[in-house]
Length: 343
Image (cartoon, rainbow, N blue to C red; front, side, top):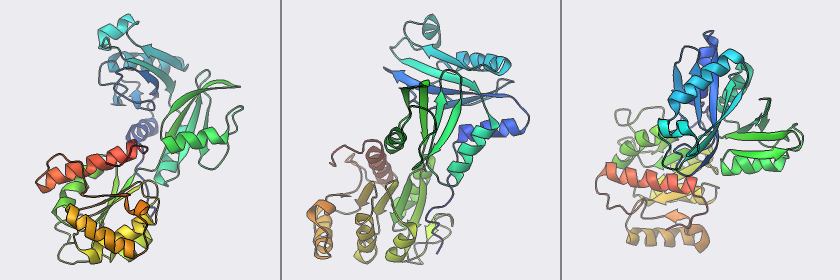
């Protein structure tokens, strides 16, 4: 059984590219969105790396201000001094670069530091959750791991934990001045139970969306190498597989086999965990029968209400690929809108 319950996470691709350029001897600047208002298309924490020759990776908008940011980044590379930038309706350049629709973006541009990048990337590869604290005045930085208090004056551990829980970067005022907190979390996981056609369509979509994914199925005829890449397959009964995979608050579990012998043990394990999303394929009649079985196993009505079933958003999906789209959309909604009532 190849489960890798914690595993190694893929690092932020923009930071990884910046680190590679530094390793090659190039000078690099990193532009980061610190605040947004209105229709700005990228969230706070979005990165763009710029090399001294103008090569760049990532984006800080929908493409409308990248040219101006690249120019500013190259100036930062030359001077070595960090800069704060703002683009918005009151800025003439904003009209030129396409933000006249009402969006406003604040950015911080700094020379990329090998030590800081390496520490963030190493934490991501090891699955550790960290917050990079950056002083927007002098560019001083501190990497804070979940569960440990920061050394920067006026910045409490509770604030760092809140940023990690919300997975939202934010600007705060401290005794040291204005600082920017950028969280780096483990990528979310998707555990699919049942190596069926929907799973074949869902796996590549989930990987493209940044999820780590596993498909659990003990049936030799379904869990085959010609249907799934071996890196995502777990050929084991769900009770054993779920015990090894250890679903947590960054995990979604979806039961697709339509076989109670396979689905019910997986759902039981998911309900006993902090999984942020639990879904199950089947009609409302099937869901009702499943609920009776799980209730008989000791689960309360409140627990059973965590199960999204029929699984996926109600978009009228018919084909396996369409159903996969509806499922992944519902999973992402649960991840990004955790307080939203289940529909």
